[in-house]
Image (tube, rainbow, N blue to C red; front, side):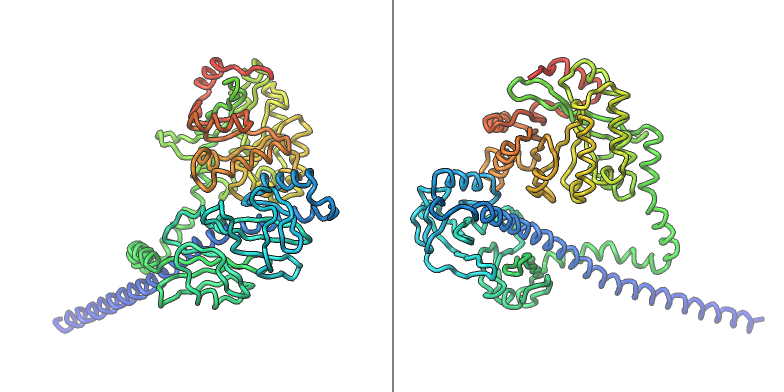
Length: 534
């Protein structure tokens, strides 16, 4: 009996030892993998951050190149003898005002500025031999200094006698992350045109062009990302200290190591949990739709001169039965990712028809703006939703404003057809958040639009010394040229309203006038500020 007990005890001891060893091995492997994952995640996170920064700079550079092409294409048919006539100078000034980041437009003869959009500063300036000539014949002058513009060095692009001027540092001035070093340089000569922070020459010399490059400079302890422009002539370099990555690694390790030990022991259970979690967002939204947890608030759109409420933007809200408010910034992207955003859009149309029937019937000059996504444009159901809204609410077509973000225009052919069908119902269309995402000037001319909504990002900088303060004015001038009505979003101060009014903006919305209101409160506000026919 003692022998059996001892053998049994010995067997249990062996099994326990093996179990402990396996747990230790599993935990060690999990911890080791966690360290690798943490490092890779940290590098990936910061690389993505640098990629986003360089993409923004490259987009600004691309915009400048496109504006240059527009200038050359327009003036290519102008005879040399007519190049500096007053009407041509006036056209240069128009290009100057409407072009983002442009400081001037000029005609150049024999490396000398013959005439320009800023005659008093630029006319007669001798430029000398260009810094380089590109394969397509474009001549480039860099580091051009103008006495009245302190600390601003111009770059000039010229082709066929027509040129634009811009400040290269504007492409990076909007970046507010002091930890990130960033610069623009020539791929061929490795010459740095403009930069912020410490840019190592060795980084530029290492880059050969064509493909994006990511590497770690161990000597300087920096993560470096370099990407070329479309012409593979210039490139953008961005770098961030490794200490930021190390901080991220510590954060990831604190999260991953405990999880890794659990994952090593309960991988199957965690997989099931993840599979269940994967579908929870979609189920929650569909359940909320079925339970009528979504409702609308309406933000008044005001006529600046008359101080009357001419319309409202319908804003979807979600409050759960336990009184938890879920932000649209959270559930809208989640609904798009889960493939249920079209169901939410349908509910918005239903609620607008129910809530705004009296407003439509009482105020013929009143309209409601409804936001749609790119998914709604592709769904094929949008026209039917609009027609049902008009029929059920008694609204006229011009009392409905469909607001499309710039992403909605990415599929040009489909968007073009959809917008044409919408406007055939008498419904007006606005481009929302213009200039904040995939903006292209071609959207404003290719698509039949009625309104341009100036994003709060640009309105906030109006009347300040911010680098972006001039962007709102450029947008306003473009809208005027294209005869588009404008709505400025996020107006919060009387100073902003005054400046926008002076610039010709008639319609605004923002907390200076009212926050978004529930149906009952909005009707009370509308009664105090009824719209008047213009």
